[in-house]
Every structure is written in structure tokens, then in C-alpha cells.
Length: 139
Image 1: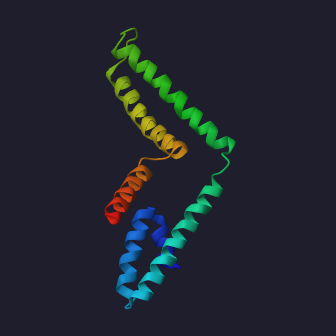
Image 2: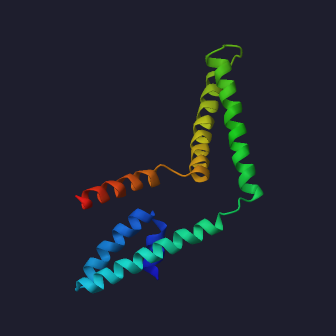
């Protein structure tokens, strides 16, 4: 159980990679290794499935965070555009640095929210790798 908790803290790909290495070290026969890898895969799928059901309905708090970060990013970007491009406002150096660092942090958080809501690029990369493997296996 400790192993499973430790592995689920890492990404799913890392979990499967590390789990497969561990299974290869522990088990000796091909049948045991295959059975262990199948069980590991089932646990990873079950973990992902429970996460999907947990986040099937967004709470009002999640929506408010997304709206807040989007509004803050838009506001700070508007201030930065007015200063750098249109030159309609005057800011001191410390204010520019402060706004820029907050905007960078909010941009990162907004990117995380967008990846969560619409899916990250990692799954697309994994799908491409799987499709390429299937093509090579059919040849």
C-alpha cells in the first residue's frame, strides 16, 4: 500500500514506468511479471477514473477561482499595455516590477487552470506515441 501511495503522487506515466521496473525486479517468471503489470495498469486506470468522477461537476469555488485569475490577468495586462505600448500612465520602477511579477504568477496559474479545464498537452503526446507504436507493430 505504501508503494501505491508513493507511486500515485507521481504522474501516471512515471507511476507505470517505476512500477514496471519494480515488478521486473521482484518477479521472476514472465507470467508473474505480466500479471503484476496488468494489476498495476488496472490500479492506474482506476485511480484516473476516480479522479474523473471526482471532478465531473465543477464547484462554484473552482469557477470563481478561474474567473478571478482570468479577470486579474486581464486587468494587469491592461495596465501593462497602457504603460508599455500606449504610454498613458506613469509608473515607478518598483510598481512595474511588482505588476510584472504578479502578472507572471497569475499567467502561470491561469495556464494551469486552462490545462485542467481543457486538458493538457501530455495526453496528446502520449496518444501520438501510442499511434506510432501501433503503426510500427503492424509492419
